[in-house]
Amino acid sequence: MGTFIVIEGIDGAGKSTQARLLAKWFEERGYDVVLTKEPTDTAFGKLIRKLVLTGGREGIIDGARISHEAEALLFAADRAEHVAKLIKPSIEAGKVVISDRYFYSSLAYQWARGLDLEWLIDLNRFAVRPDLVILLDLPVKESMKRINGRSIKTEFDKIAELQKKVRENYLKLAERFPEMRIVNALASVEDIHNDIVALVEHELFKK
Ligand SMILES: Nc1ncnc2c1ncn2[C@@H]1O[C@H](COP(=O)(O)OP(=O)(O)OP(=O)(O)O)[C@@H](O)[C@H]1O
Ligand SMILES: Cc1cn([C@H]2C[C@H](O)[C@@H](COP(=O)(O)O)O2)c(=O)[nH]c1=O
Image 1 (tube, rainbow, N blue to C red):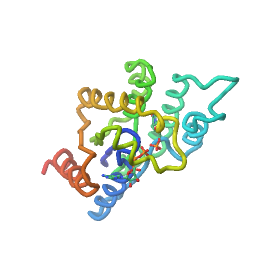
Image 2: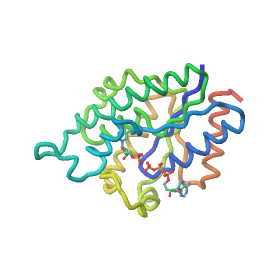
Image 3: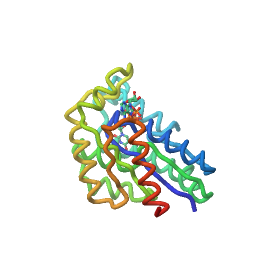
């Protein structure tokens, strides 16, 4: 069996930067690595980007924004395909799977949107549990600075208040899910990478 690692955190916390570095670290040690993300690049992921993440007219159906419940279901549908077609088969083939976001994003963000946490956990019960979840924790002010220069912003990027709630939610989730480990994302890219490697070696290889 392979290994499944997830990187989580608020928008701009440095997830994709660290996911790439961790994938390289494993590859240099001879592992077969699958680097993936959610929302995915499949038809479901594209639908989410069109209906949920643009914040524009395409997110309006019959005159109203799609409901938060419908958003949660779209993220879950995308994840179901992701798990069935890529994550499970790759773990079974002995690979190291690194995912930039997973169901913890649904718990943190859709909970922040006012949905019931237990309903969200039930909805995502099909999702195979990772061996390790790295939560990159960063104050919202800093994350906003990091993503400010982007030309295309998600609706979520613009709302610091929501991001604050999402950050609090992640920290609460870390108390509930034992596979989650908090890493200070305010440090340099290199220091964060070293902290993640230390966690991987300690938690997964028991070094
Ligand atoms: N430790 C760091 N210190 C300063 N800047 C960083 C650090 N890590 C990443 N960045 C920069 O911050 C920006 C966001 O990083 P990145 O895309 O990795 O975050 P992300 O969490 O994947 O974002 P999103 O959730 O919005 O996709 C990038 O410009 C990146 O170069
Ligand atoms: C998987 C997932 C994601 N989201 C939100 C979180 C982010 O604001 C965007 C994705 O943007 P990224 O730059 O590609 O990371 O989607 C969510 O609300 N729920 C989820 O399950």
